[in-house]
Image 1 (cartoon, rainbow, N blue to C red):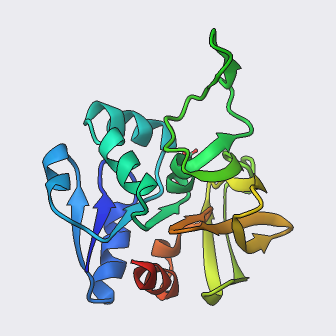
Image 2 (cartoon, rainbow, N blue to C red):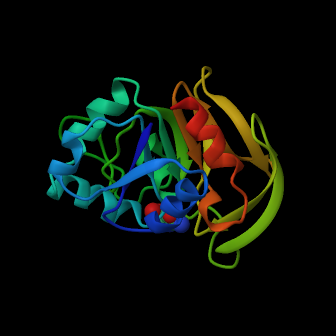
Length: 199
Ligand code: GLN
């Protein structure tokens, strides 16, 4: 079993430390040649989704990873990683209609997870906060939010794993897990353990 961690921007090292604690083989995805090897799961970390999307395209990683996710590669997207997976963003300022009548988002998204996310959903005052909540399949765990999105709406076949203050903050759709929070920034290992069990 080997997990690839997208390592172009953001909090990827913390995810690698979690995998190390679980004794799971892993590697960093930084360039196209890193994707020549076989692997069993992908982690998209938190960071800045606009930057990560652009780097994925510039480094020629986007299409290869997109295809792998579409073909069923298990993926864990945390915070900005969730935004990259989401099919829609509800508050994208440049979500204007372009000539072909399609949405043009400022974030380049894989759009494989049929949910609508709201970026920076907690505003400035509540930019960062921690809480504890019950996450389905995983248990009662500490949740750390940093300039986090939440999920506005989901398709019928998306499983809601957790809500905080009535807002959806964790979902699963087939092999894809999307979390608005940062499980890699707490002591708890159970999110990564659950993800590894899907891989
Ligand atoms: N606010 C960031 C974004 O929109 C996400 C923040 C995070 O990953 N901690 O991409």
